[in-house]
Image (cartoon, rainbow, N blue to C red):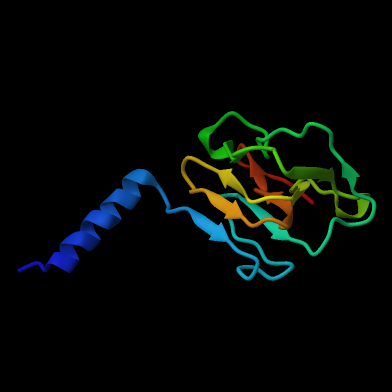
Length: 139
C-alpha cells in the first residue's frame, strides 16, 4: 500500500517535471566570491567588486545572451536597479559576458532552468556555454 507521503512526493515530482525547476534565491551567504550557481548553460560568477577597467553599458538589454532558442531566454525581470559593465580587457573571452551590479533584488528568469533571484548588492560576471551550434568556442 502506498502512503500519503509517497503519493504527495510523486505528485510533487511530477509537477516539477511539468513546471520546471523550482526557483532559487541567492542570498548574501549563498555564494562565496568566485563561486556560481548554473542556470542551464549560463551562470553569474560572484565578484567582490566591479573590476577596474570595466566600462558601464548604457541601456543594457534585459536578455543576457544572444540567441532565439528557448535555451537562450535568460532574461532579467527588470533592468531597474541593475548596472551593467563590459569587462576589462584582461577578462574578455567568448564565454564571458557583462558584469552586473544589482542595486536591488532582481531575478534572472528562464522558462526551463528555473528563476534565480539575486540579493541587493550582488555583483556577478556572466559566463556561458562553451559551444554554439555544436562547435566548441576557444577562450
